[in-house]
Image 1 (cartoon, rainbow over the protein chains, first blue to last red):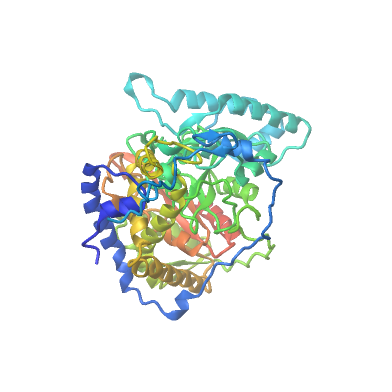
Image 2: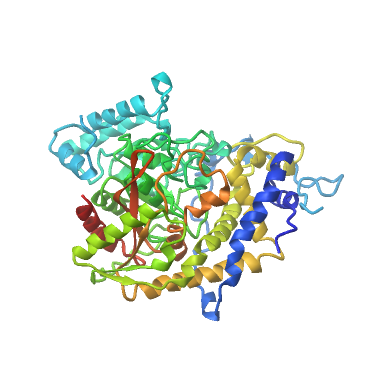
Amino acid sequence: MTNEIDVAALARLARLEVSDPELTKLEKEIPDILAFVETIQKADVGPEANAPTLRNVMRADENPDEGGIYTEKLLEAAPAREGNRIAVKQVVSRKSGQGGSASGRK
Amino acid sequence: MDLSNLTITKARKALDEKEFSALELTNAYLENIAKRDGDLPAGRQGIHAYLEVWEKEAREEAKKADERIARGESMPLTGIPLGIKDNILIEGRIASAASKILENYRASYDATVITKLKEQDAVFLGRTNMDEFAMGGSTENSAFGPTRNPLDTTRVPGGSSGGSAAGVAGHLALAALGSDTGGSVRQPASFTGLVGLKPTYGAVSRSGLIAMASSLDQVGPLTRTVEDTRILFDAIKGHDPNDSTSLPDTASAPKPMRRVIGIPRAFLKEGTDQDVLKEFESTVQELKDAGYEVRELEMPNLAYSLAVYYILMPAEASTNLARFDGIRYGLSVPADSIGEVYSKTRGKGFGPEVRRRILVGTFVLSSGYVDAYYRKARSVRELIRSDFARAFESVDAVVTPTSPTPAFTLGEKSDPLAMYAADIFTVPVNLAGVPALSVPSGTVERDGKKLPVGFQLIASHGGEETLFKIGEDVETTRI
């Protein structure tokens, strides 16, 4: 099932630049890892195994803190800022219609 | 000052009786670090337990601790010098998770475990080395160079909390905090002759721990004795509203001990070194002699643990690590479009093992494969959980070796799958969410050197006290 893994496509999906030599290495390693974990296909999973064991935790949909009290602290960590905002490259480009939000598909 | 036999308990007594001050104690550790942690003369290798030593801050904290002691208000960890794994946030200080992508990141807030330690006026000596983002079992995956095992510097200290373990084992800290996603506290404890605890999932807050795999991660102590582990665990545990997976503080009465331990013997055979198994069996025999009943356990689904772990962990890690994109914090590589900022930042900032796991995680979550891999693994995880639940109906603790081998040499496990196999006995514990303790239990010989091996005790949810009691019996019988 894992013979035809397109590692380059995975890297695009994961927004991860991978060099060509590393890609060659990963094209061997990742199928090996997936072949190893495939042993779980042999496990006999009954319906009881799907019972959820985690409990959900909710909080009231309101602002827990006064606005602005952490702004400066958090902005200090940002690589680029403009005033009280984090500065980023344009997300949607009018020209190409896809800009930075490339889908990662071929 | 002789640090070689010091424990938290002994230091507490000496500090409170004014045999030495917290500042003197801190200075003694700082001197050891200066002597042994960096590069040594004549080309000898330093341990490299620390990525950064906070000399000035540590001395200030020690002075504050001395004032508290002078007021007669000392708490169990007041003035105790600790190493802190580099993925635990301390406000204003760098926390890099041993990654280039966070090399210059300064934490905006304190992790809850740090807040709790600050309330006791503990001393933070420095941030300890680790496998990048806690991904590895040797500390060789650190972006800033490996840590060496102080018992034999040609060998690894284990990982991912290898810096914390090497620091304590090398007398460069009295105790340390690590984190354990699949064995990252217990396996390094085993490799360096220490006690290491992976608490019950939810017992210790993860707020301010840089997340790897959120359904598995726990912060845990590395110390020289079981008693020290209990002290550190008591200090950091407790419900935290800032961590939605943290368990409520329900004071459930501890289950009465039956003094019965169980061995999933069919699970132990594969890939375990013969002499490691022999040490394990002799510890079991000593517990028998001390009055424990030993039962054989059938836990057939444990065999799937590694495969389940190496699906769920990368899936969760790839999701968690999506936040490192060069926008809000950390490294940012300039590029023409925002898409290229993401991919170039992540390509440059993440090391090879992190990239590998992100890609595996992306695959097992991708449309068309998520049912066969991620969802199936989640179901098999429940089978592993039920194996443990059934076992704890008849035993206080399940016991295994902590690791199938003693500490291996640097560079020995270059194949990722060989490295993953070393987690065989520790990952089932994280998958089940139960607590486990590694206690030193004898040594095996490699290349003329005696190397410690650990004995792993696993209890049911909330069973830390059971682990400490049996752990202390192992400690007594093995001395």
